[in-house]
Image 1 (tube, rainbow, N blue to C red):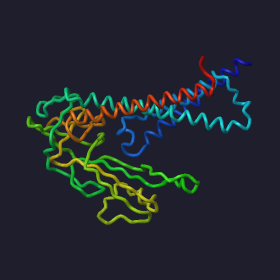
Image 2: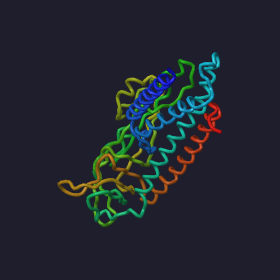
Image 3: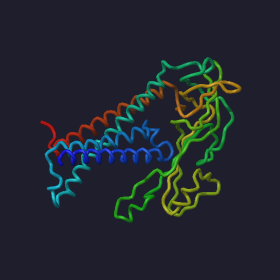
Image 4: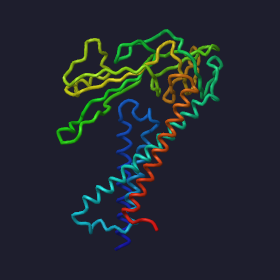
Length: 313
């Protein structure tokens, strides 16, 4: 009987972990714009972090000397303490994932990978140079002319948390990347870049703020009409970054030959403002920051949960 009960609990825990991972994955995949990609995270890593955190709690609960069923009225307080240490563990794992992602970007943007724009061949490339193409399009938030841009929208208390007595928070509800194919040239020849679906890290940031029930001007591009339709009665904050002709850009990705010339395009394309060395330094610093914060979070979470459940020597 005891063995059957133990097997049942193991199967139940596995099913719960599966659903936790699936829910975390699809929630992360549905995150607006590049909220995850900018931090170097992927939906798969987010799901793994949730499963690992929940799995640690379940594992410590089964190995520890705490009888949850004997807590009685203290079960709510015990759950609060578990959450208190489980959240740093989860955030720590996400921080390690972000550090890993930023570290990969640092390696891709390292100046030793630099290839002349005019000598690029098919395959993985890393190039830098000024944007020379004069073809531009209108960015949706500010109406500026540019070759590539990113935008995001934050709404204050989009889900009505204040009505439930919680503190109002800004939350990103939409975002995206746009632009037109452009060229960079370091003097050795042009290289075409298609920003569609790319990860971008740009400058020239501008922010437009609208008060609750304030209607945007007619000149406003409204990149996502659903935001104004669903959240027009709340404060909104539109942020846009832009790459324009003459700006210096670093590009990594996969170059393939089109009908006319080589072009860097696809989901693995990454466009960053500045030179390869500047971008590499930026990603190295972010990787160290995320990794150190992640290690601290994991250490605090494991220390607290180990003591709480009485696991260990």
